[in-house]
Picture (cartoon, rainbow, N blue to C red):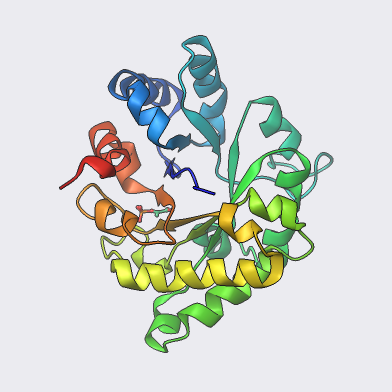
Length: 257
Ligand code: PEP
């Protein structure tokens, strides 16, 4: 079964809701029906922008998907500052990023937190984009595959094969995030291929459906080579997703020479 490519723009903590509207409007009039037929395109803005993005996407019938950068483990309750899965579902979010390395590093999220958040997303009908990947010390030690697969197994503990089939896994080597240092296509494929093999070992044919993205300094000038690799089904794009021309060009990787 052919997997539909996915390009998801992680805006991180950038753009207020007015700026979000401007960026989505630019994307909407630049992308055409052919783009939306060729791949799934998503923006992942800060929480405070999501309602504005929803209104615009619904009102103008834009085929753009959107999501959130995080969610709470619990569905409701006394968790000051948290945003729950039901709240995101009500806002029409298709995706939610779970376990981004910045959440792991700055907010103490561990593998168990990530697993509980994956489950929170799934029980609310939102597709988690589960981030895994090694730091530079692990890579220098040559342990990128075993490290990333440990994170993967922990994140997916208790998740059914049916749910795994619809998941998105983002392999994001931490040393490549926001650094301009992109993994070579072969290095990215090594780990993305190992992720798919591991999903196959545990969940059988779900591996043919689950999408594996690469993330880490993906840009217009490196996306085409990465997308040629057998197990890379798209990208989680940080910095380059804030520039509409660059993001459109990333999404049009298939037209690059
Ligand atoms: C990210 O934050 O998920 C990311 C991949 O960032 P960048 O593209 O800026 O490296």
